[in-house]
Image 1 (tube, rainbow, N blue to C red):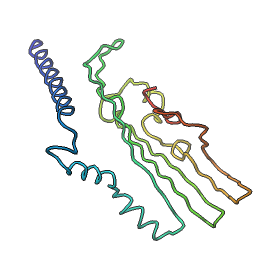
Image 2 (cartoon, helix red, strand yellow; image 1 turned 135 degrees about the vertical axis):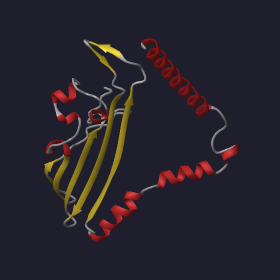
Image 3 (cartoon, rainbow, N blue to C red; image 1 turned 45 degrees about the vertical axis):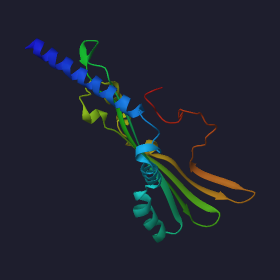
Length: 197
């Protein structure tokens, strides 16, 4: 029985590795996409993806037409980190956490113009990490420590910015919660919690 399980596990691992190798070979083999077999189809598909905006067309634009002083934008981002190694011993128990993170982040930024000089700005982050629901996570650091690692559930985490501003050519006043970026770093975000630090 034990040898049969080991054989099945080895066959499964070998199949995964061969499949990954085939994907890598097929992904890097051949001519550039714009030439040869695909001609112009790939560039049309790429252009379609670049301009694909169902939320803007069916959500944002109708709302902005109904409330002319309101403008908003946003994005949805999904991060997934998956372990490609097998089971391991960690301390006194076996570790088989295939997904390290499956974070879903929705950011919505809204601006409401009361007058030419007075504006209300709001930036919200809604984060949910599904890794704790997709696999057994008992004993992991985050669920024991705080639920904030799994989802943003309080005002401080969800509302990144909420401020009222009065601006003229010679005078600015801003009241509320505001984030001021002092610089920019290529490749990493320093104001976002990231498990790959």
